[in-house]
Structures are given as C-alpha cells and as structure tokens.
Length: 113
Image 1 (cartoon, rainbow, N blue to C red):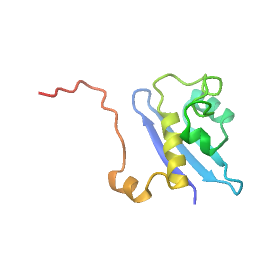
Image 2 (cartoon, one colour):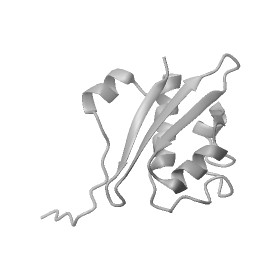
Image 3 (cartoon, rainbow, N blue to C red):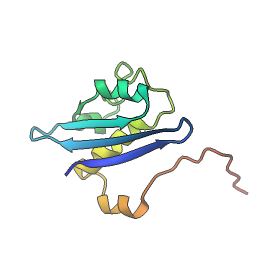
C-alpha cells in the first residue's frame, strides 16, 4: 500500500498531497497533487526516486537544484517526499506517525522565558 503525507504550506495557502509507492525493482514512484503551479512543475520532473535519493543528500534528485528550481527555498514539499518515502520503506514507523500525527515549524516568535 502506498504511503501518503500532506504538506500544508499555510504561509502561501498551498496544499500538497504526496504519495510514494515502492516498485518491484526497488525504486519508488512519486505522485504529487498540489494547488501550486511551482510544485506541479517540480512534480513533473520528479516521478521516480531511489533509495539513495532518500538517504544521501549529495546527489539526491529530490534536492537537486536543477530538479527543484521552481520551488522556493522555504517550501516543505521536499521534506514531505522524504517522509513519505521513509514511511514506504519502513525507515519511519507508521504507528509512530499515527501517534504524533505531524511535525511542526513554529513561525511566530517563541519566548523561552
């Protein structure tokens, strides 16, 4: 069964549904449904990834500047792809994900005192 994550980019009112599914040859298919033209452009260039794409930053097609040229630097879609792929490969526990539900980036000022 494919693994799906949702990336909500509230700062730009865009939502990305990322689905990664394992292929028989060990590579993974990537499908991104988004209401962002820039992410859709990126998605058209990234339809297949390998294990090294999700484990090695150097040489990863997910992070490749030529592949991701249409994305803004703060877009979380690349992180979403890696998380979906880690779920699909068992490198990230599905039960843990169900328990914690989401990761967050807090954007407003955080006072520690």
